[in-house]
Image (cartoon, rainbow, N blue to C red; front, side):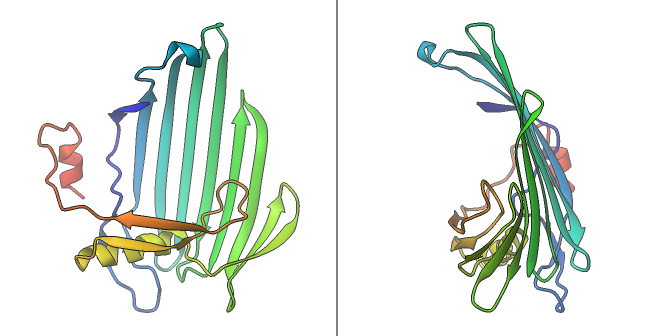
Amino acid sequence: MRATRLAFHAVLLPAVFSMAPAFAVPALQAHRAVYDLSLDKASDRSGITGISGRMVYEFNGSPCEGYTVKFRFVTQIATNDNATKLTDQQTTTFEDAEGKTFSFVTKSFVDQNLDKEVKGTATKETKGLKVDIDKPEKSSLELAATQFPTQHLAELIDKAEKGENFYETNLFDGSEDADKVMTTTVVVGKKADADKADPEAPALAKL
């Protein structure tokens, strides 16, 4: 698939306005990005004749109140037997300003019917990470020490500003079954100027 329209430019490294010493995470710029998606091409054997969708990412918060992320990804798939399938994933997370607790809920719908819901809270402890799952069933997990997404983003910005171009760490984001810590690797490329012909260039220049 390819993104056919960018309604608002999403900055992967949001601007840092100020650093609050009392908190682990700096003030990050709130932003909302909307992407329309469409299928470029598919093989005849796939049985798929078309895919369309929309992805929305919204980031809000402050170093005093913590940070909230809302993500939604809707796709409609058409097949050569004239059938269609609509999928809808909705995720909301909240990370406290000190990066110690992280709450999450992900709902997955198929043809507007709830297919799966994962809800819980992760808390950093001395020996690692404790995850308390509320849905689909109550359970508790003990995982390796890790970071949460906003804290990870803040550290990535800090390293990029210092000229470092490689960053690897553990990350927990509550995705899938919320039962694992992932190793994430980021490579920061050289700074490049935005294409002046890009219709989103004026909006980007204001950030």
